[in-house]
Image (cartoon, rainbow, N blue to C red; front, side, top):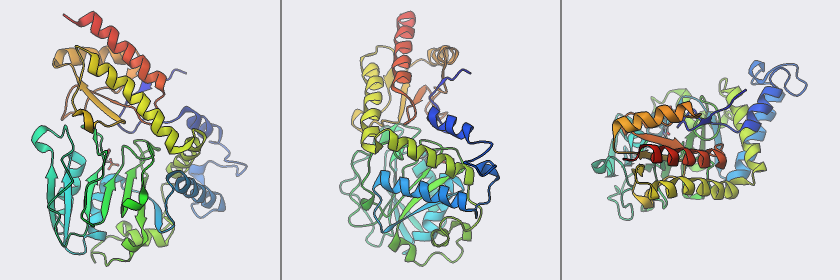
Length: 361
Ligand SMILES: *Cc1c(COP(=O)(O)O)cnc(C)c1O
């Protein structure tokens, strides 16, 4: 067996301990004589899996009692529609556009009402987070929407926007469980699992109870109605059972690592190794304004397309894979999620240093 260092933005690296545990439990999950994949979602064994996953997530994130935790399908992208359908009750909402994912959510919301872009960093290809201290939030806005960590561009909010009292909804897909967050500051947090938490096919949503009492758009598909899902304990229909099980194993792994405070320290140390190298390098440069850098997704360039290609090819051959930047940014991107070990980042930086020596004119 030979494992690579996988810097993919998603689906992405998972903890080896979790993969090994899943493999060990594949044929016979804890005496049931079957795999979790073969198990009824109405069975007591699966109920225990989903209940434990929720309890562990609540503990990790210190989720207050007045929030529901949902395990959904449809990817983060389905929430782009579900959010305005469920929550745009005044016919108006405000969006902050910090990249493609926020823009897609905003574009989708325009189908259902007046979705205003109250700030944007499109003018500089989303390389920064706009000043959000005094935004023109609509008086009757139903909510303010952000993408808190911008997977493609490598920016992150280090301070939440001033929503002027409006409910905040955040797409945390590529930062979920990478650091502690104060859940009580949000009306809703959601994340596609395949970035930092588990396999593709699961979306985790954390929603404040009063949000679920709103009058939803009557055309809301039942599968997108958060209250229906909440009332059914995420079991309105067959949920992504196996994915939820893997997420649960990741939650337990995170608890063994010391929880989110420990993960934040570790993730910051990892990111520092890479950013310090980029800041000192004569060949490789980060693309993002320093104060807005993400600790999860790190885009960088050499300024020369041929050199970028050469680097990606040689890195791949050396076992550092999926470093190609998003097609809209070019260059490289290293996603260094929770499960990427420090050793992977250190070895990458070592490889970059050698590449630089060999190729610097
Ligand atoms: C990947 C990603 C999405 C899209 O996720 P899907 O599950 O493919 O729909 C949305 N938002 C962010 C921040 C992402 O990183």
